[in-house]
Image (cartoon, rainbow, N blue to C red; front, side):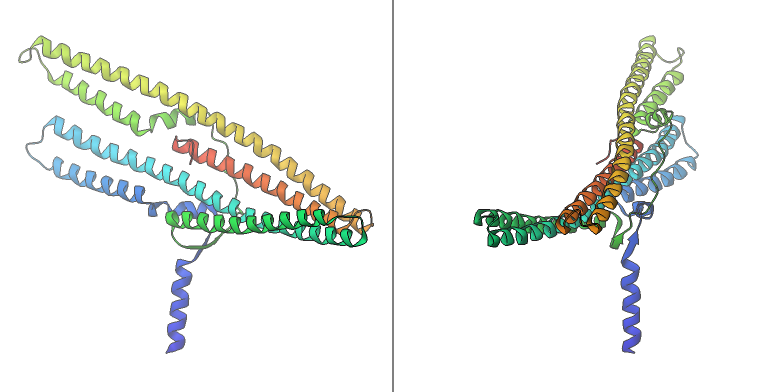
Length: 328
């Protein structure tokens, strides 16, 4: 009986402790609070439309407003999903970087530990001073503090991601980068923006008001006022589209820049690998010391971290562009 309980507990814990790649983490977007609330509004708006259409005394304005509410709720839900995806990407890449920073900090500690040993040896053989030893001790202490700080940062970043996607065991950084969107995506982002829809709805409502006014029962001043409101609504729609287009273009330019930086870091990483391979051969040939090679390993890790940061910057720029917000 106890064995069965243990197995059930293990299976239950395994179900909650997941390992995610970024695409898998993004599938958890429906867990995010803003998305949950937006979905509730979609369902409620749809139910309201169904009730409205069943009313035998239904008027055109009431129907239009009910349909607009569904359309608005749907667009806001889609926007909430994209915003949440951008948040997940930011949190996910934050974990990757924080995790690597721990590795870097630990490697730096190894280097400073060896540097301290070397300074102590030099002091003993007369080629170094006590001050050199103290400096090495201080640098090692700072490195150890950095390890602790990096570890705390890593734990915080994991909690931040868990708040969005739920509990997870660890994340996997093996996934393909999304391809650069085509430039026509800028127009799509403008059209699907909730602010655009809000003004599209305003134009539709004011146009309907104009259509419903007939000179047989409406004063000319009332008709002129409705037409003026329509012109204003159309101008507001044009203005917001132009503003959003400029913003989207800026986000797209930022994405292009991130892609270029990533390509540069890919080459830098390849060069670092080659340099480390050469240093390994030099170590084997007795041309450099083990400490020199240890420092080369640290430089190699730093180059790898630079590539990780560039890749993450591209991911955040990509999903920020899709969200029309620039990422978080």
